[in-house]
Image (cartoon, rainbow over all chains, first blue to last red; front, top):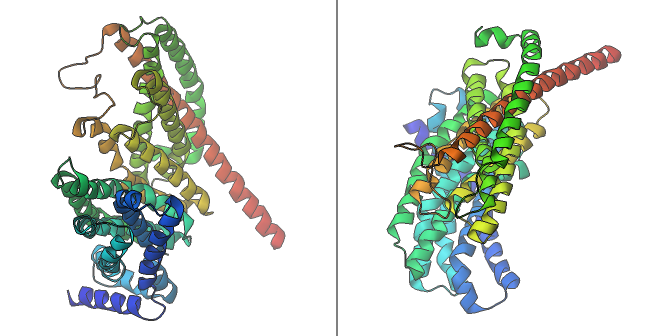
Length: 222
Length: 243
C-alpha cells in the first residue's frame, strides 16, 4: 500500500514540476475552446447550444494529448523496468499511475470548465452539468487511454498511432457525456440514465484498463 | 489432429493446400445456390424488391462480428498458449473482417435510403458497427506500424481482446436502445420471425459467406507464412552478404 501511495505521490510531483507537462493539457483545452468561436462564428446562442459538445471534445483531445507521458518518460529513464520487476502487482501499479495521471492532468480540466463555460455563454446549470459529467467521464478516458499508452510505449511508437487506437474506444464516453449534459440543460430526456451509463463506463474501464495495460507491458517490454 | 499439430507451419501449409480447393469449390456452389434463391425470392409486401439487399447485408454484418470473435480466440492463442500460428491467423483475419464490415455498412446504407429515407442515421446499431470498422482499421495500422511481427502480435492481441467488448454492445444495441434499426429477427428466443421463403435463402447465404471467409482466411494465412519466410530468407541473405 505504501509502495502504491509513494508511486502516486512521485508521479504527481513529477507531473507538476517544470517539464512535467500536466498543465499543458489545460492550456491546450483553453486553446481548443477559444478556437471554436472562430470556426462557428461568435453567435452566442449557437455557442450556448454547442457548448457542452465543445467542452467535451476539448477535454477528450486534451486528455489524449497528455497520455503520451503516462509511460514514456518512465520508460526512457528506466524506472518503468523497476516498476515492472517490483513485488507490487503490475496491474495495481498501472492503476496507481493512471490515478496519479488523472489527478494531475484530468482534474485541472474540470477545474477550468467553469471559466471556459463563461466564454461559451453557458449558464450556471449547464456549466455544472458539464463539469459533473466530465468528473464522471474523464477517468474512463484516462483508464482506456492507458491501454493505448502502454501499447505505444512497448512499440516505441507514440502520437498518431495511439490516437487512432484510443479514439474509437472513447466514443461511447463522448456519446453519453454529451447526452447527459444536454439532458440536464434542455431535457426532455432524464439526466439520470445517460449519467449512470457514463459512471458505468468509468467503472468498467477502471477494471479493464489496468489489466490490459499491464498485459501489454508484460508481454511487450523486453 | 489437434491444434498443436498445426504449430508446425510446414504441416499447416501442406494440410491447407489439400483443403483449400474443396473449400473454394463448396463456397462457389453455395454462393451460386444462395444468389439464385435470393434473386428468385418473393418480393416483400411492404419493402418490394429492396428486401433482397438483406441477403447480402445480414451475412456481411454477422461475419463482421464473427471475424472479430475469431481474432479474439486467436489473440488468446497468442497471449496464453503462445501458439505460433495464432498471430498469423489474427493478422490475416483483420483486413477480411474490415472488408465485411465495410460491405455491411455500405449495403445497409443503400437499404436505408429507400426504407428509412436516409443513407445514414446516428443510431446505436449503426454507430457501434462504425466503431467496429474504425477498430479494424486501427488494428491494421498497428500491424503495419511495427516491423517485428511477434512484437506487433502481442500488442495487437491485447487491443483485439479489449475491442471484443464492442461485440455484445453491437449485438444487443437494438434491444437496449430504441433504435431505427430493427431488432433481431432470425436468432431470437421463440423462433425466427422471418418467413420461410426468406429464411432459407438467408441461411444458405450465411453459410456461403462463412465458407468464403474460411477460404479467404486460410489463403491469407498461407500468404502470411510465405511472406514471413521470404522476409527471414532476405534477412539471412543480407547478413551473409554483410559478413
